[in-house]
Image (cartoon, rainbow, N blue to C red; front, side, top):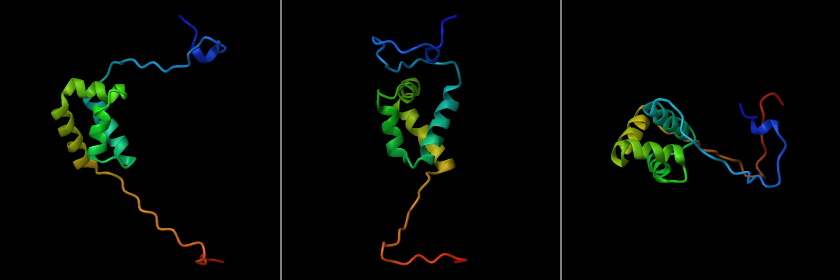
Length: 104
């Protein structure tokens, strides 16, 4: 069994590049989990579909190749219809506005 990279010293010729590879699992579940995770980061359908279309993202692009572009889009929309997209709005007071805190 080979030594884990984190257990050996860095070598000058090591390119420090990440390499991706496939793993066994349920691609339908993976697609659902990816869409749910990114929807919680605020990604809407358009941004999610773009993520699946980008060959630089091997996992999502691999799922798109597996399911096809239309089926992938339909699955993204179905997950978003069920779980929605997290939206956050922040309202900040102008610096000159005194901040009143309960209990002070």
